[in-house]
Length: 242
Picture 1: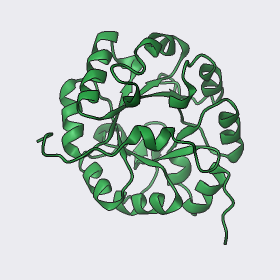
Picture 2: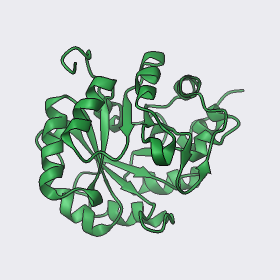
Picture 3: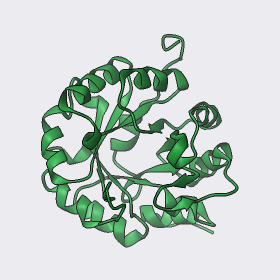
Picture 4: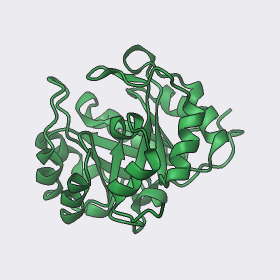
């Protein structure tokens, strides 16, 4: 089934290119989260994807976890058929089966959370993802995880892995925006950095861009916006004509 899934869109290139504005934006499609509860009662992933694409998103992140985020794997195919943007499958991926499953579902990238994976499993998943032409967003939440994964970033091929810095504490769910700024200093290649969680204002993006981070993943701020195009333009620092 993976062999018949069709070509993969280049997620890595879409989010590491020189941005139009201050940053590239991975716009997230999610109905709910453990920290925020129900975010969007009138949830329609296809409509949201069209809105994000029209607003200038560079890539999409789609929540597929059902228990905590009210997601579905089917959303990836629906979104991918609706817009030309590359799509990240956002889920708790811990087993090679899920990587194959992601490829069959139409994902162009997968999330790998460093704190829930051993070094050997993370390495195996990175190798498999590269074999299937999937970009891997390796996510860290604290310094220990960053130092642990630095040696495998770019393995087995540089253009298949990104380093995500999530500002949310996995234990308390509290957001500390300074996490991205602090950990970015220890990243060997800033072009592959993705800042996640707690990014709400233009000033947040300005601080991240000043730290050398060129890509951000934004969910709730866009999902709750009444004018996604204006919010996107504001976050990117782009003047939007009326």
